[in-house]
Image (cartoon, rainbow, N blue to C red; front, side, top):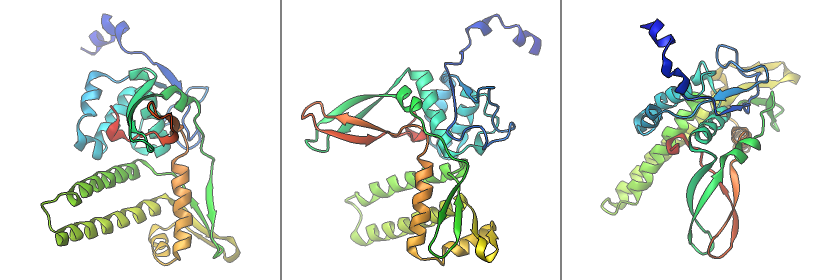
Amino acid sequence: MDQQMQHNPLRQYFRQFKLFLKLPSGTTYYTPNTVEFTESGEIGILPLTGKDELILKNPDALLNGEALVEVLGSCVPAVKNPRALLTNDIDALITAIRYATFDDSLETNLHCPKCGHENSFKLDLQYALDNMEFLESEYVINLESGVSVFVKPYAFPDVLKGLHAQFEQNKLTRAIDNDSISDSERSAIFGKAFKEMSSTTYELMLNSIIKVVDDANNVNVSNKAHIKEFLFNIDNKSIDKISKLIQDINQIGIKRSFNAVCQKCSHQWENEIDFNPVNFS
């Protein structure tokens, strides 16, 4: 059977690579067991199959990561371990797969913030990929206390936590807007959801911290339990600084915004492009 498959006369009609892409993280973040690059530091992108598109319509598979793992394995064979990817690279690969499958545009509808008119836009995904930014080898924030906090972008499990948190937040919004529940029930739902989101925020921050260093006092800590205790016992200004840097480096990669012009009143504004895997297709 294997020999018959190797000589399948239909192989010539199989999908081909539509483009080759450099990852926002470059070539130094992963070992060859995770990503195999070409000599020019790129990886090939195949379009979605019919099976891939069906997988992406399963919300449970998206939230637990199985859909992303299968689709990345199918469309980006150079990625040997999708679960080791950084969020920056996941976003870039999703965009590249969209581009390879649906040509160079992504349709979206937006309401004008000035007149409220609903506009239909076609976003140039090739522009988003061609104007990609790249990660530096190291990111550090220096706090007033004298310590330096080294951070990295979200990894695959953190992306899933973020997706799950967004899913729960959407459920919360629908529950709060439900007129059939009382004010006390609405308050209880909000309180529980806020506590869970706060916990998730700290967990994601903890996962993104590589180490905390104070050279002057010979301190170099990478123990997660110690860093967790550190986060719970520093001032809010320091937390905000760490959080801001993590948010900023998670946005590095594909260009995420475009200039929109209302088709009715000609108002111009900048709008973010949604590359959420849940909204893949």
